[in-house]
Length: 495
Ligand SMILES: Nc1ncnc2c1ncn2[C@@H]1O[C@H](COP(=O)(O)OP(=O)(O)OP(=O)(O)O)[C@@H](O)[C@H]1O
Ligand SMILES: [Mg+2]
Image (cartoon, rainbow, N blue to C red; front, side, top):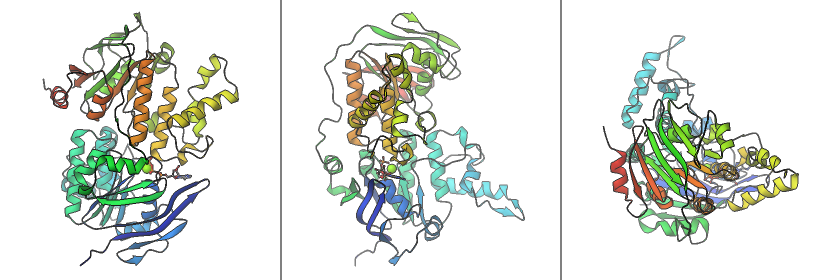
């Protein structure tokens, strides 16, 4: 007997001015299966989800749930049917507790009052069921991004659910938290839910998914059982070309020491010392809370140093703010780009050039033609998918927004560039473009520091890796001797 799909889309098309986000897409999803959806940035994955959850309406096409056509889908209707989504952007209220977030907008009541006791207890049960060790009374702002993601999942599961859609749930997670997520996905599948899983990390598709569908440019390309395909085959279908060398290398020479960090101590860091040479790509590895981002922030003047000195090309720097750092030639692409990097109500062009204008102005290049040229060049280099440079950045897909911010920092003419998770949410093809740009910057003699939670990536693009744990440097490995095992050992050193 053939299994019937729980959710079926037929010839769905979604058009925006100047963009066909989805073109005649037909696809089915089944209970008890984890179904991956992959595709380049802007392929139409998030659009597909928004149609299923009733957040947007398709221009054409039909949707069926448990065999019945869904007319006029809406967020309310989707929730009633049991379709829920964990979105690419977190939607938690940071100054409320975990329990309040899980039950936001439908707090349990005792008479006219919110029943906090019950809310805490119920939220506790949802979390426990998920196997997540989070206190429901904790304020969300005190959790790591990874744990916040797990709360987001708990929130969507606090009602009856038959289909759960996860849009890049693993992007902000590190190894440890990832294990939680995988356990949760497996559990939901065993309970008979249909799980839709969107990710740019190819490895995990083979770890936890049963099926995988490829989208390209708004078109549905294929669906396969995971056991019947390979990473290379999927990538080829996604980008429509071969990507052979995932981590390209360039011939380059290491110059003199440029950046020297001596005894840097903050409320979280203990006596951090290292130096990096011109043309070198230094990776920093570590688990959550190891102090990787804090190290970058201290160098960049974003956090106050209690002790320590930073030298650039032999000169002692007095950095008390990011503005000082940029002036001295140190750039930092932050991890939390939604907060620190984007102006959602501005165009792609203005986002790209915002920090670059002073630079252009200084060298007196600021005339519209030139700014436009610089901007278009970056759009082409990083393959930012946008109809024009004047498009509002909020209308770009998540990954394409990321590319714009990365492009923007690459435009800064600094000696030292620190990248914190530069490829988060970025597709395989564009990742490679970013690696190539990093190589090019190194070859030009810039000093590069990269923080990444994806070890294979970090190993692929670093000349040397510092490993941190609990606010200290616990070891160092270089290109010829680095292994995943060695790095993980150093990262979990206890004192
Ligand atoms: N509100 C909108 N207005 C105009 N264009 C839009 C809008 N929303 C999405 N698009 C366009 O539709 C296309 C598909 O976007 P979508 O967000 O579905 O991509 P995605 O596959 O989720 O990509 P990513 O991996 O980057 O998240 C993109 O070209 C995007 O710019
Ligand atoms: Mg998306």
